[in-house]
Image (cartoon, rainbow, N blue to C red; front, side, top):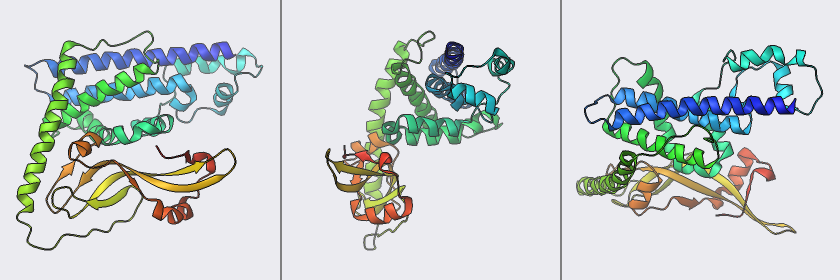
Length: 316
């Protein structure tokens, strides 16, 4: 039974990988074609590629995570492959699994699983995955969506970055995509343009800040996914978006201290209009991407009361 389930896992991983690579290649080919002017098609195609890449990654870890509402018999066989059973219990499900009779999870569920598997990547990818989630359905189903070139470029960047990361996990062992010269040139220009974009944002915020006539604006906001800090341009309160996670400093003998760290991935100031879209832009603007919230630890633990196993041992 274990041998069969491993073959099925490999089959699902490779089929998803193959389809992901096909969509990735098609989407990037259209993007690099200078005569092509279809943001909707590029974003839609690459969105599907990214979703399939994540599903291939999930299949590598455990196929049962890919499907919704699997019969309990299949769940038992997947989770307990060491059990001794007759072929009659699982052969009737084999064709259904291979022919996509059972519905797979949606993009948002794929992203949630990805964050569990690779929690350290959440800060980096969260702004991009939010854009992906908002653009995907619109690009596929809307007749006249309104996308900016910036949305398209961020989707292309995400597709290439996610591909490389998932490839490094050993997912594309048979079917893979060869990064082209055009892809490399895009990545280089994307980094250069990002620095220039942040410079323009800061200059625009400086001009607007000169028009502010009132005292500095103070902001108060509740929740663990936002954090108030000073704007690097106008010194008013602005709002960071991200995630708050508990940590614990411990020795082999006893727990010494617990605390909270806020990992920021974007920033917005309503006073001067400065908007920073990801961790790289925060850095270019001279802002930190981690903040200590340990003073609020008691309140956090009262709300969430996480198990000790959920707490990182020591801050990064």
